[in-house]
Amino acid sequence: MVRRGVADHRARPTVRPQRLALGVLARAPIAGTAKPRLSPPLSPEAAAELSSALLGDALNMLAILPMAYRAVLSVSDEESAVLQKLVPGRWQHVVSAGTMQLEKRLGHGLEHLFTTGAEAAAIVTTDAPFMPIDEVFEGLLWLAAKRKRALLGPTGAGGLYLIGTTHHEPALFDGVDWTSPGVLERATKRAAELGLETLLLKPTYEIDTPADLDRFARDLASGTGGPGMAVPACAAFLARAGLRPVNR
Image (tube, rainbow, N blue to C red; front, side, top):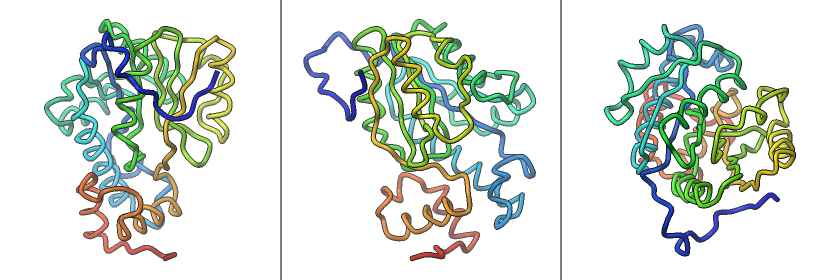
C-alpha cells in the first residue's frame, strides 16, 4: 500500500523521537569532483562552493530534528576527513561507505544507522534545499509507529531526496538502479514486493543541473520555493556569484 501525505500521530504516544536515526549522503566539496554537472556554467571552484553551501544549510536545517543519532555518510575515508572539518557540532559522526555506488552507499548507511538501536532510520540528500523538514519529521514518526514500513521523499524528476525504513532492508537495494530516472517507481515497486507499507512525502527538487540552479535562483528571488532564511549559505553564494534567474 502506498500513502501520500503524513498521517496524524497523536494517537500513537509510544513513538519516541529519541529512537530515530538520520543519515545524510554527502560528498566533500572539492573542486573538480563536487557538482560536476553544474560546471559549466559554474567554474569547478564555484561548484564546490555551492556544494559546501548546500551541505551546510542541509545539516543546520536537519539538526533541529530530535534524533537519537545523526551521521554524515561519505564515499571514502579521504572525503570523510574533509567533511569532518566542515560538519556542525551535532553531527559528530562521519561514516564512510567505501564506495561510489549509490545503492551500496544507501544500504551501508541504513545498516549503520540501525546498529544504534533505532526504531526507524532515514537517509536524505544535501541537494534538496527546500525539502519539507516538518513533514520529514512527521514521516519519521509515522515510520516508527509500525514495523514493515518505508518512507520515500520524491523529486519532480522521478528521483528521491529521502528513503527510510523500520529495519535494515538489503533487498530494497539489490538489483535496483538508483541513479537513473524512474527510481521512485522502482523503489515503490520493490517496497511493495517486500510487503512494506509506503508513505510518500511532499515532492521537491534537487539541484543537479543548470536548469535546477536557475529554478533555485528564481525560487529564492520570489520566495515561492521556501523561506530564504532556511538556506542562508546558498543565498549568500548566489549573491556572491552574481547569479540571477535566466527565466523569470
